[in-house]
Image (tube, rainbow, N blue to C red; front, side, top):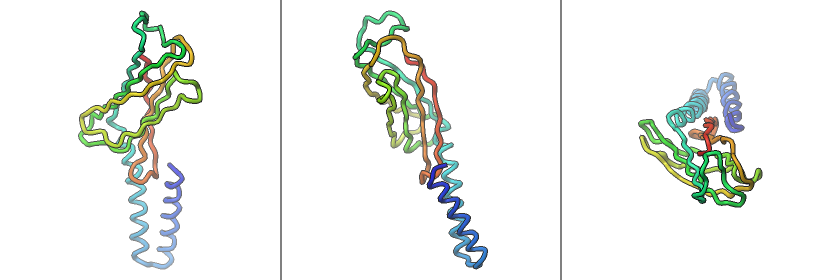
Length: 165
């Protein structure tokens, strides 16, 4: 839950206490709206990430790599393609993709992308380039999908440990 979510919980409790002391009907209505928005904001991020899958493909520029254990060379430009697949019947909106790219220097590893819409039963493919800061074999890295729902009151993350192939 985010800070705004905690603020909504406090506001809902405060409005309920005021409504119960004053017995004013519209305060009960306002309290019900606050709690309904909170519940909706908790359900939508879970639902948005439920049917999404992520795949990664690393494209090395040098065709001379013979073994899958051979990694990129130092200062070599690597293209990383990410494919986000929606297997659900409804579109997913405002999905944030957090990529932990091991090829970059440690301070530049974290990449963030925003997908405004992932259509139903479709794939969204995008890519970025990275520069290898060291040569050799790299272990797998994680990709995280994040959704904050309607008002950003509740945030849900789903992490995928993907190989670097």
